[in-house]
Image (cartoon, rainbow, N blue to C red; front, side, top):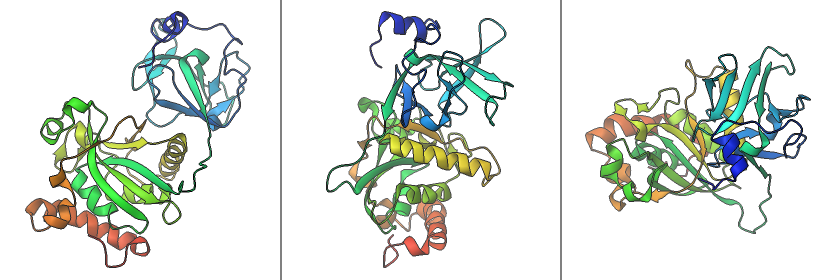
Length: 306
């Protein structure tokens, strides 16, 4: 959590309001992502922002799952808070017809931090990382290891503290961690968006804290974004999938900024490859691997990977 000034605490913790037309982001129009001032969770993309001439920053959409709505204490309005930490953002209004989405998130500038788009400058910038959670990490590790352009896949834990980042504690379901895989990939061969295409097909993103018989928050569907470019790509994909009604139920995948990745114990490495005849691998992992092989033949490594 970021240390707040007295005025920031007044707005963010005591649900105050900054004066109209006084905020830093009222007329701001640079490309990038707006994050929560207190916990740094991504909230809005710059393309969500529009000029409502109301005196405060206005957005007609949000990053999926980033903002929570609550009844306001005045009994009339709807308050919006950061879904991750509960920081007060402002209020949301509908029925004004200011944009095609007919929605206005009226947000205090002081509740946000803006991060502009940056360009990769290093010679090896085509080597990137992605961190994804969608049920048991044995399944995702087996799936992504097959793909051409994927350099390495490591199972691990994200979303909780280092002290409880171990398999026994995480399996209890109350550490805040998700079982994830961290993927090192060559973006000249496979893009982040292509990795997400495989991600959507390798698990059910519509079941909350559950994949099949694996139940608990550690099995939640989640994207831990490494930078604002990944936040933007994932957010836009979720919006497209939702609009196209690709899934029968709403997507519940979390999209949050990566804070830490804790590698899993070494016996989890290449688990399916080394334990393929185990009943769980045969009944759960292998069908997922076979599905991806059928759907993404042209993206597989020669020899079929796992």
